[in-house]
Length: 216
Image (cartoon, rainbow, N blue to C red; front, side):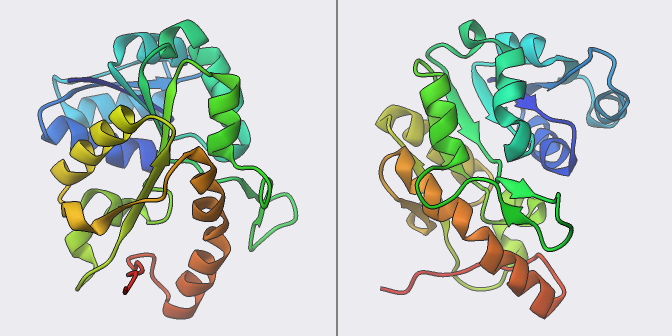
């Protein structure tokens, strides 16, 4: 599959590398066609990796991953172009972290809205699915990093798009029974508001290689 990864940070590079390892063709998008981090990633990732602008990547991808920060997600997706997102599954991995007042960050969006919902409203013909934002990059692509049973969440308005994302997550090693569907895209509110607890857990245990399990 051709997959667009928007964003050149640790999340984008980690997911992009895993996708290339799984045999996908991956184009990493950034604001400029010659982004240095993207170029370094292409050299490391090999022949199935390429780079371009946000628009280049979005046009290339059959599936699009938003891996930029939540605060700039709409700006990046506007640069990607609504026409390049039309009808495609758009996996939003972002969190609305606001570092303007220092550490720990606060949430720029919460309670009555979420980045996931904002993206869906702004790009109504894209099929937005929220997932992977509740774990760190190592756990995203290798759930066995965390011992025992633990869970990942998905939400979105389009069942077909969620099924496509579930298939991708299962290819990362997530067992089907550990991927919990939280319903429509408004489920992104709770998923994003989990981040303050995740940050406190990180501070308490000194590692981001952790996750939670829903016992029921």
